[in-house]
Image (tube, rainbow, N blue to C red; front, side):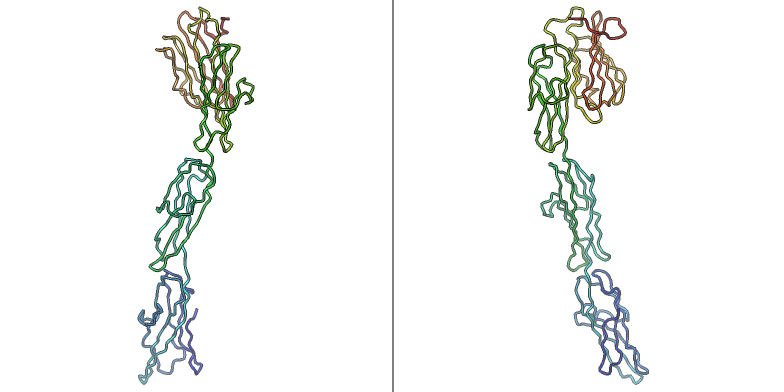
Length: 408
């Protein structure tokens, strides 16, 4: 674009200059090219150029036909050009041209990524700036608002991290400043970060752990939630699949018959997330065990949590007389081994190696034996979305297969 046309009174053509780019941009060199008077008199030539590129009124910024200048602020600058001529008779003249050159601002572009994109409460979230600044500018500063309070005072590095203790959306902002010596230019961006609710965990404690027939058993909920309160605890004490037998952190029931019992707990947090837990245990008969049975008769107890991927075993204990032989066989997904055998040194054996998640259709078989006594056989078959199916039988000395226990 041609700038700075100045027509004398005779309406003859006049000198001018061009600028590239037009409009000029802050912090990026602009090139000015002089266009001498196209109607020079015979023998007249250009002898000198003088530029006022910063608009201060002084023609001391450049002396060539083409000059460059970098503007540090956005405004209209009154650029001037003086061109000196001399003719064949050594007569000289000076032509002056001035024009307002617009200088456009060039703001930086703020942007950032986050990982993970949809965090849960207490997950560390990493924010990484991917901002860019215009050509010719330098990044002067950056500031983060990570907690959504509107104050950019949480971090200044290119990478920032934080975590959130409660679920819900968060607004995260990044502001950057750039420039080249003059006023700074600002870029800002924001993202809405959905912080998901972390589901609760649950397990059950029994008091006593080996109740007698007809005696009351207290069930205590150990449900916990890191990012909010537990609002409902519902109990299924009769194994009918409906959590309608008790409400609250504790429940009580007496069982009129001996044998294996399974009770379940449903816990719900303030955001509606649920978790189910179960406990299986034996109700001991009032009369003493048959003398031919291993005495005291072994008790196998499992406490766990039902997950979408299977069952998490939290407690697996075997109570048996000292020096009993306990053999555990495991088959299916999640098993740490196929077979393991140990002789008990005390009356209670805690199987820590099976505190893990077993997949649906996995099977645990537990054999408790001792010479010249009827031992115990217990099996657990892992099921999807339900407590494991349990079966209890006896092991007669020398028998290859378990069978029903004799009436005691």
